[in-house]
Image (cartoon, rainbow, N blue to C red):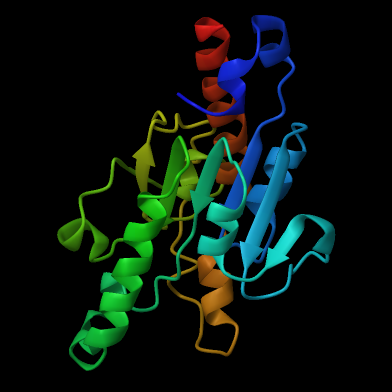
Length: 212
């Protein structure tokens, strides 16, 4: 692994705060999980930060933010409107939008960041780019709900479930239509965000500790 961690001694790495970019996140859920562990985490979206944390939220193009600074880890949540197979009945009417969405995903996955995780529901990313490295469910991380979430990983391990919940329901899928339905469906569950923050930051720091 390259980057500023590679130039530090073992003692420095042990105290290292990772630079984390959470691309396409307006809720701040993943950003807060990393910042709770002391990391320098930033969210980025075209929308303002829903939690009012404007100091650590960049409102603008995620690709510009990705290239504009050094990051140890990037977690991406590209919009799934034109990608999710749940909307397959409309695919024939939005081929141009699909191509643009897939191009955006490819540019994120090919970004200049050592460790990358890209999250999306079951989508055409699997057939058009590559299959996901892992599919997780909220009920594996303390939430009694079903919502298959795919993860495409670069230099990161698969997430290990932290709290298996027996009672499960498809609350997200059953949400009634409304102007904010897409927002509710796109949110990362806090238990998943906490697992990402703890497991992936531990992994990155431990790798550099061994190298140092």
